[in-house]
Length: 589
Image (tube, rainbow, N blue to C red; front, side, top):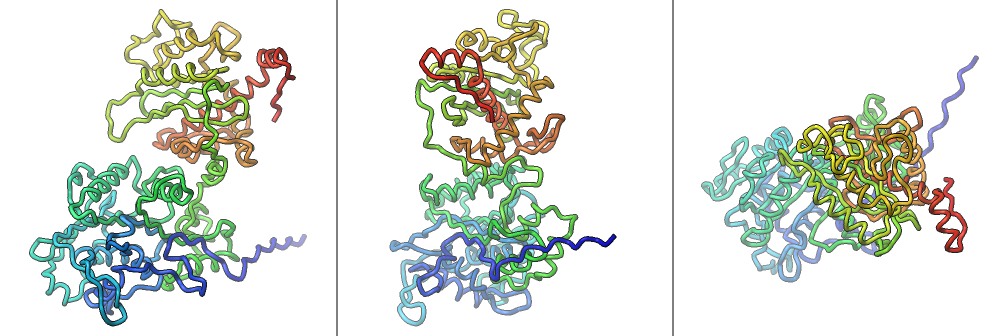
């Protein structure tokens, strides 16, 4: 029997048009690139050609793409203040982010990096601002590990020309470089937020921010760097982050920064002066032999030193996950292979304008924890299925001994019942123990005093006593463990019900039949959720048991959607509808 021919791969368009973000990619009507009206970048580039060099000794030059970024990074307004206080340079691996960041560090170290208030009066630069060195330059190259900084710091010995070393009295070191007899310095710093606090740095390079996460101390570092830049004496401290495409759901500094920039572009947030520059593969780009060469040539920009054939071979190597190839070589923000939902799919359903009104009929789902996982509370409006985050409690970074503040959660529950008409309330107590329960629940509130001392038992029992008579649907209605609120997801029958709703919810999201409030942490938890196959289909879970990537609000969202369906199909709800003159509403899908 002859082997059937392999299916032909789809041919890419003649020219792959990359997704270009940032002002450096805007064009005039004649096709030329837009440049800022005034920029120190012109003077900076002249200086760099005289005092900096490539490793082979050639005078420093920018590619056209890099030069446009420099012009915008050093762009000034009419009052000679920087248009952008910080910037992000996101590119594919091997593009040259480290050399570009090293050159900018050198400029901030001893170059004409600050406006002098004067302008050139003659020549090609006439009318452009003249720069001057910072009188007390302090440049930090920050990373969450020393290895991330090593590549950047090793570039400086060959970057400065002999003239620069002599003229500025530069003293080269492995982790710190001085100039002007110690008056200026470049230093490498790693994840020690406490050590960074209070520093009056004039410029900071934030290296590989796609690895700056809560677990690595990245968020604390970013916060300290921002505070230090804000309180700078001249108000002109700069920050530059260099990064590959981040992995959605990791909740990295790179991810949060991109989200902040997108919010500004969408008009959801004030513009605080963030310059974002990225060149990415278009969404339709295929990861195959037909598309890959054209895509790489498009997204590498002016980085002609990148070997297209070598990169394509890496992409086609089955040992490399497709998501990694898309992030590193296509510079695309993508979900991992086992992700339950892509970030852009969830974002497409965001409707923050659909707020809950007082008196709305809602259902609420609670997912409890003690300290490691998050505790969440989400609502779903019965009339239209709109999902809203009511509360989320996660352990703050480096907060040893922290536990979820139960009284605070109880207060949110109480306010929810006072504002809205809650028709169903299910709560998964989790497995954490209550150190104050003495091994058993409070006999004054527990419906079953023999079930142990779980962290949330006493509160869930109190919620059942307090609100049970108001609820149309109860969690457990048969057997010895009847309960209005407690819905332990460890029960296999409940896992089956939940799994069915997970699959239905995914379909609703893809068909844009679900809306949500766009809550940032719920968005992160949905992006963190991974597909998990069980006996009843595909449910959601963490990437692994000890993972720091939380999914609890995603669980609450699905649970709330499940409760809405139970309410709409309940006999009590149908009876009430008929009494009001309407027919029964049944949700089949």
